[in-house]
Image (cartoon, rainbow, N blue to C red; front, side, top):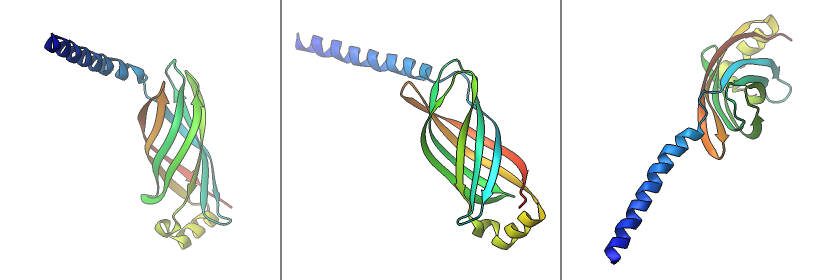
Length: 157
């Protein structure tokens, strides 16, 4: 009789695990959140070189989510200039655009301080490449959305 109970318990556990594997993938939204553009790019060079910007994203799903973490590398003219590692709790509306503020400390050693100063004075165009992931959460289930966005900006004093 004990062996019968043990077999029934094992089958119950196996069935529960199987159902969990079917349900959890359904918690992820059908479509990925899309990075539309990065705007309002400001370089603040007063104390530490700091790049501030707003990432405009779009949630095509009919469900609300939460942005938990942004983990990206920023390349300026092909050189790694910064790493974005921001923790946050930002509500994402359903089927709407939303803004995520970015704040990045620039690595002037990689860019070259003198080159950067002359480029800013001359109004040079920079090729900015954002590459990494945005970590979101839906009903407690985390998932990542890849980001690979390039744009050209001109910085002037």
